[in-house]
Length: 190
Ligand SMILES: O=P(O)(O)OC[C@H]1O[C@H](OP(=O)(O)OP(=O)(O)O)[C@H](O)[C@@H]1O
Ligand code: HPA
Image 1 (cartoon, rainbow, N blue to C red):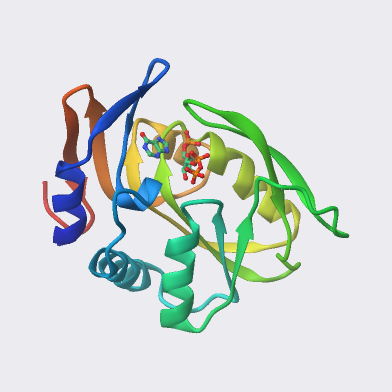
Image 2 (cartoon, helix red, strand yellow):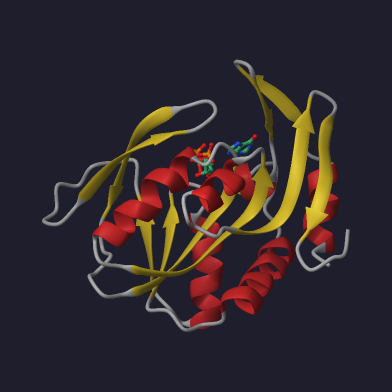
């Protein structure tokens, strides 16, 4: 299951971002090369989890974009990208994002009241990003049908569950100076 993803994670190099050991991977960084086989494997798996009964895919700049694009082409469902840049459009919602290595503002445009949305992203780590985004989408009147994140590291997904949000993740990993260890793969017995 998810063989291309697993193989690529085993090769991921680590760099330090302050105290935070940061893995570098095609899905989370777009480098060194994002292969169509990997995007295809992930998008098919996401569709097997979420189906296609939603009005909009929502994802976050930058590395949510290839995921949302692939899903949109496969499902025919449009997507909106939550941006790190302000546009000042009517109805734009501003939220504060905090990750293990950065802080900043995010701006939501294009999500309409009453829409069913699928939220996808590349990584959940501290959970800081989704902790800000999911309540904001609900406040805008969106109905979140599913949240799917490709790679889970740390306890962000557990913290989100404690807040009442179920996050589907495709792989759970551990990261240290030596590299990435795969702890769990969706759909596989441990
Ligand atoms: O669970 P968290 O600790 O919040 O970390 C997860 C977030 O970190 C990364 O985004 P980043 O802000 O690095 O943006 P990028 O996609 O532009 O690399 C990733 O795409 C998630 O959105
Ligand atoms: O270690 C990481 N690598 C890539 N993207 C990330 N987003 C949160 N943590 C990470």
